[in-house]
Length: 184
Image (tube, rainbow, N blue to C red; front, top):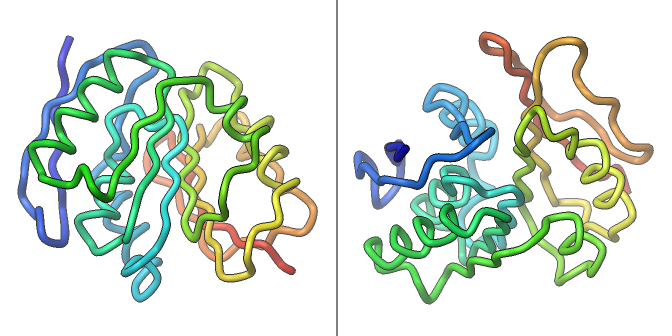
């Protein structure tokens, strides 16, 4: 089953993109993306972005639309990767985007180059958020980095790793989302 998302800001504002559907795939809602990018004003332009558990790529594509220098999309589903590659080509963004088909946990263990913005929105039922947060906490992230986290509101939002601070948080429906930063 295919899905559709809309870019809500930047150079591709209003563009509708199709993506391959799949279990656990739920793009970040327009309203939540709008809040996130309002929180990030002044930090997206020129940023190096990592969209882990990319799925539809809604967050990374939105960042590219708003001026991010580059985005790496890591996704396990081959169908979702194909959709992402097609959307990136359609937006003529291939020079600024890289799609990695593989396991996000393995990617995190390899500790690639530093990123300015990291989006963590794994499938809720897969129990991947806490291990991803722990792996990221082991990275030496620059102090200006921001980490966006999306998780189910119930039973409780995840605990923050030691050394990270909460910049902003909000809930909408059954979803909790927050913007974090390293304290060092």
